[in-house]
Image 1 (cartoon, helix red, strand yellow):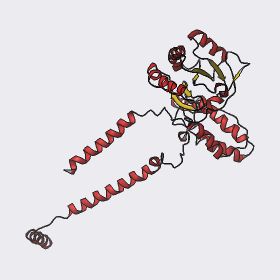
Image 2 (image 1 turned 60 degrees about the horizontal axis):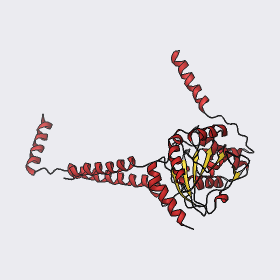
Image 3 (image 1 turned 90 degrees about the horizontal axis):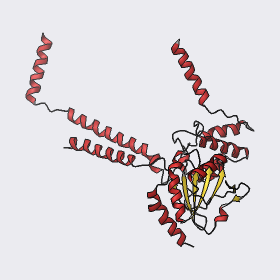
Image 4 (image 1 turned 90 degrees about the vertical axis):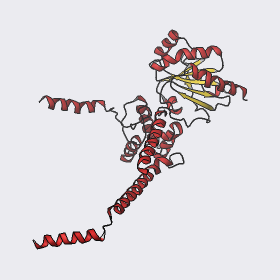
Length: 152
Length: 176
């Protein structure tokens, strides 16, 4: 019972923390754009949260900014551009592919390739090690032992 | 032989990456506003709310734009440094009183001294957004043409003043 109430309180705390903001949208598309944008923009104070998730004051201000710009009929691209003009590519959780962000995008593929090559080389080496030459004398002995076993 | 060299190589690579990681400052986000025209604003002055200040008023002058607030703890540690810098009269210091209560801000200046030639109010943080402010204090250096030339995030230390701000201001003062 004690555990249950603790779990219940913990569940409640999540509701209490989430910044409750009531926003009215002209259309479902606009609401969708708002939700997409706020979950793609980084909160620069906390850095590992989107502005939709963060309770930081700056995140609240940026959510307001996104909302107001949508109300003014600005497109998602316009708003993303507005944010990068001020905060740089870092504000985007989905950074554009540029020379500067190249390593970020290509890095995982490069590491995967390195891993595959390593596995391939390793596996091939194992196989060559496995083939051990057995002299004719020993083969003769093996054969005679096997035959003995068959007879008994 | 490779059996011994390979782990060593891996270790060196890992160590180099970790060492680089330790010396990064992820909280310092490079500003895309460097070498761009200072974002426009027209904001009420803290000490004289009926008067407004715009960047155009500062054309032809080198100025610092320092973002501060009475609720900001690191601003308190930065404040004596700014007071000292103000005494040298190297450049105009404009304060952006960011998301603050005017009364609290005025009390703060009365208590700790006022290094600002003028402070303007940004109670809802909109000027802050235009300037890409994400952590208070922040300090921008703007040249005579109204172009942002440098941005410092976090409290300015006496070393920063000597090594970065004063040389840069002297250089900008010499420009036309």
